[in-house]
Amino acid sequence: MDRKLIYLDQNIIGLHIDGELTLSTHPGHCWVYSKEHFAEIRRSTNPDQFLSVLDEIGAKMLELQLDADWRITGVANLIENGTPAEHYEAYIEATSSAPACDGLFEPLLAWVNGGRDEGPFRQLPERLAEQVLMLTRDLPLDHGAVADALDVVVPEFTDTIKKMMSHGNDITKTRKALADGKGTIGSVSGEGELQQIWRVIEPVCAGVTCDQFFGFDPIDRQGYENWPLYLGIVSCCAVMDIVGFQAEQKCRKLDKISNVRSDAGHIAMGAYCSAILSGDGRLIRRARAIYQYKGIGTAPLLFAANKSMQPTANASAD
Image (cartoon, rainbow, N blue to C red):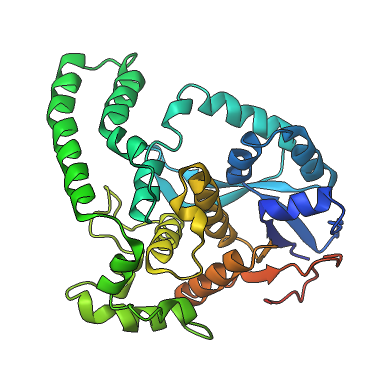
């Protein structure tokens, strides 16, 4: 019998730790986690407790397959060998060489969504240059040429940021510009939610398709012949923040943007599984809208408080 892969949102692991639900093993399903969990665990005060739960319930890591050029192939592999602690240690080792690069563009994301912390946003070009120089210092490159390129890119990037700031970032005005002055998008519900949103926005997006607007088919594919579904879902979540579909205040707060990114990453990784389980209603609403739009068979499951959750072969969406 094929196992059902049930992807766990990080908050579900926390609820298990707090005793608000019980994650039990079952021959018909396999609990699944990804490196996005490691990003969240790394930010916690007690990583070991989360790793212990993943080990206790026999959870397996789902990992995106990359090609020889480190590009996403569109395939995800379930890693059957190794413990969560071993995988986490490898993750920390692999990411420790450039920790400052993690979240480099978070000030941009927060500002676009209406954030008021302008300092880090203004400093972004300088920080970008510092990180490029750091990452390339040990590579066999013409470092003078790298520096010369940065001398061109950094001022241009700085000018772009100045122009953006001169226009302001009032998220209400942004949404009005997208023809949603009455909050229509925020009240969208039922079937085909992304299509409903697109019908509101389409009149002011001439020459753009629905897939392009939501990030599933970007104009700049960054070298990809076909834009990976994972990246499309992450991009779509960012667009949802801007237009106001199941958006939260935390998308405007710099210290919370990493959590917003993790939510998007979980929805994207869940697309490779039979179901995704979360205690966050907004995350489940977004996942359901995206999966419906892209014809993805993953069932979004919302955990109801004070109940044990043990998925079976006939688990269905909330």
